[in-house]
Amino acid sequence: MHRFYGLSAFMRQRFGKRVRKIPLDAGFSCPNRDGTLSAAGCVFCNPEGSGSGMAARGLTLPEQWRFWRDIHVKKHGVAEFTGYLQSYTNTYGPIEKLRAVLGELAGLPGLTSLALGTRPDCLDDARLDLLARQKERLGLDAVFLELGLQTADNATLRHINRGHDAAAFADAARAGAERGLLVVAHVMAGLPGPRGREGGEALAATVDFLNGLPVHGVKFHNVYVCRGTRLAKWFGEGRYKPPTLDEYLAWLSGALARLDPRTVVHRLNGNPARGELLGPDWAGNMRRLHNRVRDHFEAHDVWQGKEHGAENGPSPWFDPEYEER
Ligand code: SF4
Image (cartoon, rainbow, N blue to C red):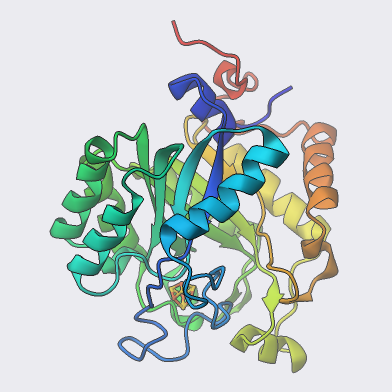
C-alpha cells in the first residue's frame, strides 16, 4: 500500500517520467555565513552548507553534471534528471550571478526539471520572475523552489540563528506559487528551542502552517549533529540531545497524518554527508532508516492526510500508476 504522495509518483503521473536528481554546486554563499546577517550560520549547518564542495574544487556546472549523470546512467539506467542547485543560498548575491548560473544549465543533456534551494529572505520579484522564465527558456517540465523554513515557531527560529521568521517563508511561498513555481518546504524535527528541544507538537504545528499556504511539496528532515556546527558544541556539552529513532518515527507519523494529501512528499529524513555525522548513529544508516519508516507506517496504519481530509484511507494518487480521469 502507498501511504504517502511521494515525489516519484508525482513525476510519473504528471510527466510520465522516472527522474533522478543531480546535485549542483554553483559556488553561492549565504548571508547567514558571510557576516551580512551573521557569520555563525544556523546552529545545525556546518561550513560546507550542505554542498558537495565541487565548486570550490573548480568544477564547472557542466563538469559536475557529467560526473553525476554518468554514475546515474550506469547505475540506474535513467536518462532524465532534475538539476538541483543545492549548496548554500542559490539566489544570494547579484542577480547577474544567478542569471549566469541558469545560463550554464542550458543544453545539459537530460535536464528535464530544475530544483533550486534558497532562503525565503533572499528572493525578490526580479529573482522570482527570472526563475519562473526558466521553465520555458530551458524547456523544463517544472521548476521547484526549495525554501528553508525548518519550523513555524519564531522563537525556535531565533534560537537556531535562522535570521528570518515564518512570515518571510509565507511571503516567499505565495510569491513563488503565483508565478507557477512548485514550492517545496524544508522542515526539521527535533530542533533545539528556547524552551527545550522541539518534538511532535511543534512538527505538527509546522505542518498545519504549511497546509494553509500554496506549498506544493515538503521535505522532512530529522535533526542530526554534524561536525563543525554550533549544535556539535551543544551536543558535546550535553546541552542538546538529538531525537531517538522511536521519537522521530512517532513525530513523523503524526506530521504525515496532518499533512494535506495533495502535498508531495520529497523526503522523509535527512541524509548526512560521509564523515560529518556525530550523532545519533541511526541517522547514518539510510537503508535501515527507510525500512524502519515503512514498517512503522504499516504497523501503526499511518497515511498522509489521515487527519486532514483523507480519513477513509490513503488517496489513490499515492500510487505512481494512478491516472487522473
Ligand atoms: S541558511 Fe542554509 S547555508 Fe545558510 S547557514 Fe543556514 S543552513 Fe547554512
